[in-house]
Image (cartoon, rainbow, N blue to C red; front, side, top):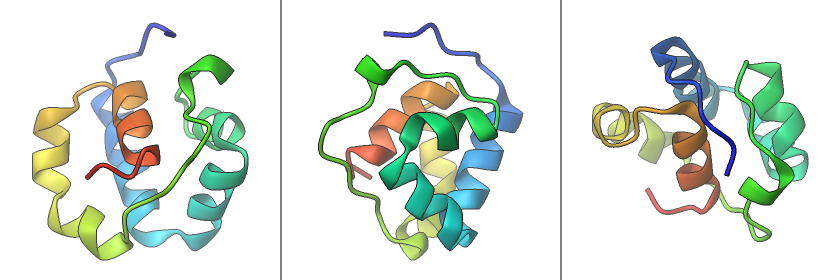
Amino acid sequence: MTQPSHSQDAVNTLLNKLANDDDFRAQLLEQPTAALTSIGITAGAGDIPDVRTLPSKDVIQANREALQEKLGSPVAMALFILAGTV
């Protein structure tokens, strides 16, 4: 697995986009590596689950604080969310 950057800004950007940006959500499902790179998160192709789902924007918003506390690294956050396990 790729060594994550522990940037709180990247985590905040990811959560903001997941909660508000339909275009980013679509790109994250279709081209996850490119979508993550666009916001400064590096993940290798082997890190991305083959089957991807996203929780709803409402679920992301409702669980934002818990997600930030639970998953401090941007890569861990992205992989957890792509697996649809919020």
